Length: 380
Image (cartoon, rainbow, N blue to C red; front, top):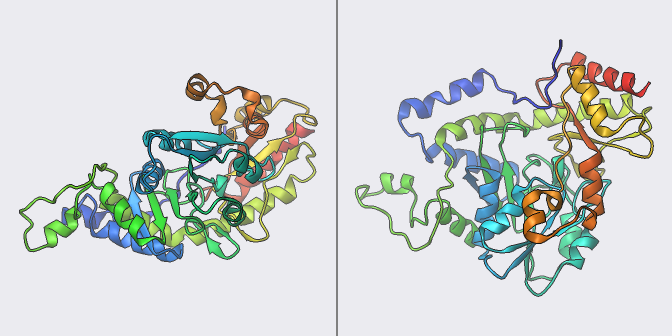
């Protein structure tokens, strides 16, 4: 039976050959390839600084740590997102304060976020979910000036809002290069900012708190002397092997997004006659990165529950997934914070009713037509 995966990384000979240089040079950890990847990523996203990390999760932790967020502080997080967004706040000893989301965009509900602001609020983390930029400009205009904005741009490499790329809309941005993202380094992440002081501190913190990097030390006049450590840091360094792959993938980013955008339009047009299937928002003031194509199965109109539709598609060889989870409905957050499912109705409904269908750069035209045909057979 044919199998169409929900996501597959698009790799080729270019990536294969790219890893040869660090493997043969012997420089495997953070070094010149990481520096080149950071420079290219910063240029593509029009920011002053980009710092590679081991994942978007560790980039988020670095961003919050660089802002000095810690015990007693609160950080507002939308409930409908991957759990790492809220977990990063807990890693700092701060309190994640959940808010609801807009069912139409899946992004942060600004009114709900503003309702959660207290004197202890230090930051808000809007999530550019599935590649659609949250309205950071409107959020910034509504928040107190003292509250910082950290973009969770895990899904949004290459996305933009009002002509400005993701990662430079707030004080800091954090990206993911997990294999389900449009470009990948296997695991990996990137922190971006236009604030030089924050970038310098984050650079120190990702390398155990060392005063200089290993590359700087080895290329300096006294490579035999260890760096000083004035900060308590972490080991969040990307390897040069990963960065070599990332450089090649970054060069393909815009072509990948263009292709995904064409097939997103195909889905919207071809599946428009299925009344119970709502399609994701396509912005008219920015660029969607289309990390995923996440539909919404209207529970009032659908002939079958969302999970039954997913089961039938699975039986036809079409992989699907819920969009993501509602953090407030996860066991850890229920147990430690006492949340109930109805506390955030938008996040609750999106967890129960969203359905991602396959959209990636390894699919053929026939694959897309088959997915559409399977949905029409269920709808018939």
